Image (cartoon, rainbow, N blue to C red; front, top):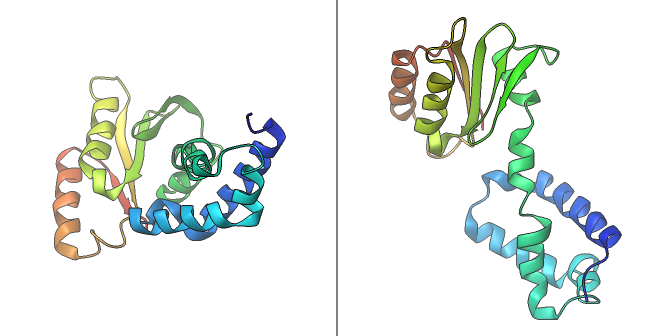
Length: 175
């Protein structure tokens, strides 16, 4: 037996709403494990899923079916990086990038964003995506989830120096 589409969609929406409130992208694996366990035993989530799945498969279904796409979907949204970099939401976009996320704007500016833990890849993406392209420039980078590991000035100085050497005009840290 499989979970009906309407039930799956309703539960996905519910869990994504809860994940937003929990700041899911910033949680560590231990905290996520605790929430998976809570949702598995929650009547609104695990109770509903246990009508369609073996109880031992409920947690796996929550993790691998309902929440698997959550990080990618949330990180793909360009509104926050645009706002943090001072780019109007209405700016023309000529190219869309993933891994790490980014956009090339119609005026040639290239922006990238992603978790601060992957700062090297995010900075290099902005550089590589504009390198050798006439009129393109590595305009801005937003590093998310930066509150813990990159909260001190010394760590941020290393990243800022690398950004400057790559010609990135704006570097923004976002918790």
